[in-house]
Image 1 (spheres, rainbow, N blue to C red):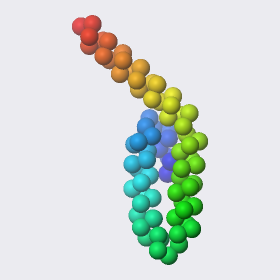
Image 2: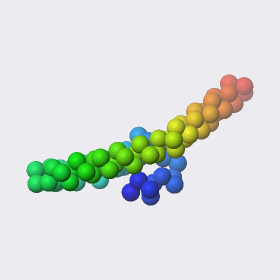
Image 3: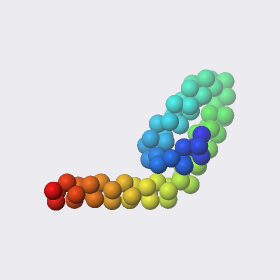
Length: 77
């Protein structure tokens, strides 16, 4: 699921929100019967997110620059 959305211009909080909509029901369903599977799912998700930190950092820079340019354009009108 992470890889399906990463091609989009999606920020880390947005991706986490989408992932949690899948992860939380899974955890709720399996928390009492298979705690190890829950731990592995969360650990796997966090590992994938950590690997994407450079991507999110670059995206944040792009978004900030776009906002700065928009602000400057409005200010100079």
